[in-house]
Image (cartoon, one colour):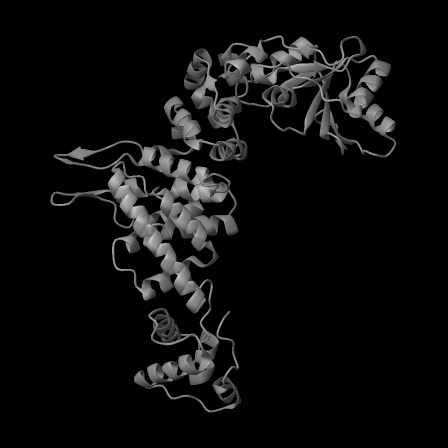
Amino acid sequence: MNIPQLPDLPIFRTIAEAAAELNQPAYVIGGYVRDLALGRDSKDIDVVTVGDGIQLAQAVGRRLKGRGRVTVFKNFGTAMLPTQEAGEIEFVGARKESYRAESRKPEVEAGTLEEDLARRDFTINALGLSLNPDSFGELVDRYEGLKDLASKTIRTPLGPDITFSDDPLRMMRAIRFASQLGFDIEPDTYDAIVRNRERIKIVSQERITVELNKIVESPVPSYGFKLLFHTGLLQLIFPRMAQLQGVEKVGQHAHKDNFYHTLQVLDNVAAAGGDLWLRWAAILHDIAKPATKRYFPKVGWTFHGHEDKGARWVPGIFADLKLPQGEEMRMVQKLVRLHLRPIALVKETVTDSAVRRLLFEAGDDIDRLMLLCRADITSKDHERKARYLRNFGLVEEKLKEVEEKDHLRNFKPVITGEVIMETFGLKPSRQVGELKEAVLEAILEGHIKNEMDEALAFLLQQGAAKGLRPEVGPTFTHQMKPGSLSSEA
C-alpha cells in the first residue's frame, strides 16, 4: 500500500500558513486521506485543528480574498469553505466525545489530536496528513490504518464494543465500507456488531437508510446484505427482507431460497449498471413471497399473486424506510407489479396484443422492466437459462417491432372519459368507465386504431349496445371531424 501523498494544491499551503499564524496545528484527516491511499477520487476534505476550527476557517477565507465564503455551524463547532481546486473543506477543532447509553448524540469537548483520532469509526478513517510547517505532508497513522488498508480490513481504533455502543450507526458503516471497498471485517469487530446489534434501535431511520442505500449502490451489494443478515442487523432494520431467507421442503418438493435469489437478482442489476431505484425494485420484486407461499401436493410450492401483493406493500415499505414517496416509489411499485409479465411472454406465443398491453402498462419504464426481468433469470440449469434468455431476446424484438408500429409507450386513448360523457350526455358513472375500458381493450387487442374516427365509431357501437343515443351538438360535431384530436398523446 502506497503512503498517501498530499496533492500539490495551493489551498493546503494556505491552510498551513493560517494555522501557523494562529499557532494551531492542523491536519487533513479521514476519508480524503484513505481515498488518496486507495487511488480513489475524493473531493470533500476534513481539516482538524488542535484549537478553534471556525477561527481557522475564517483565517483561510480571508487569505482567499473573496474566492470562498465561509459558512459557520456554531452548534457543531464546524465551518465549511467551498474551493474550486479541492471541493468543500470542513474545518473542526480536535475533540473528544462521551456518550450516554440511551443516545448516539455525544457530549463533545476540545481534545488533543490523539483523542480526536481515537473517536474515529475505523482505523482506515483515522489517517491524517500534516499541514504543519515542520512536518508538512507527513502521514499520521496512530492505529495502523495503512496496514489495514493494505490487508483490506475494517477494524475500530478502540475496542469495538466501545465504538459501536457509543455510536451504533457505525455498525452499519462498517458493513457499508466492507461492501463498497470489498474489505473484510476484522473478527473481533464483526463479533462486536453481533453483540451490539440491538443498539441500532436508538438510531434514526433516516440515518440508517443513508447507509443502507450506500450498500445498495455498492459494486456487489449482495456482500453487504449477507453481512447485514448474518450479524442480525437486517432482521432489525428490514425484517421483511430477512423473512425471504430459508427453504421449506415437503417430500420431494422444495422451493428456492428467495433471499439468496433476490441477492443474485440485485447483483445482476448492479452489474448491468442499474441505478439505485432499479436496485430497489430488484430487492422488492419477490418481497411478498413468504406471505403468498402455499403448498399443493400435486404441484409443490406456489407463490401466486406475490407480484400484486408486493406492489401493494411498496408504499408502506418506502414509508417505513423513509425512502421517497414520489416518482421513485411509483416506478419501483410498477416494476414489482409487472416483473412476471415479460417472463410469462417467454413461455407462450408472443402475441401483438400481449405486447401492446405490456408497453401500455410499463410506459417509459419498459427498458428498466426488461433489465430487471433479465436479471431475474437465475436458474442454475445453464441450458434452461440459455433457452430463457434466447426466448427473452425474441420478446425484446417483438416489443421493439410493436412499439415502432403502434407507438404505445405511454400512449393515451383518444377517447377519454370527457369525450364519452359529452357524446352521450352522461355524468361520471360506472357506465362511463365501462365504455372507456371497452375502447382501451379494442385498441390493445388491435381491433381498432387509436385514431378518432375509428375509436369514435367503435364507441357509438358500444353505446348503442347499452341503449345509449349520442347527443347531437356543437361539441359532438367537432369531435367527428377527422384529425380533430391527435392519435397519439
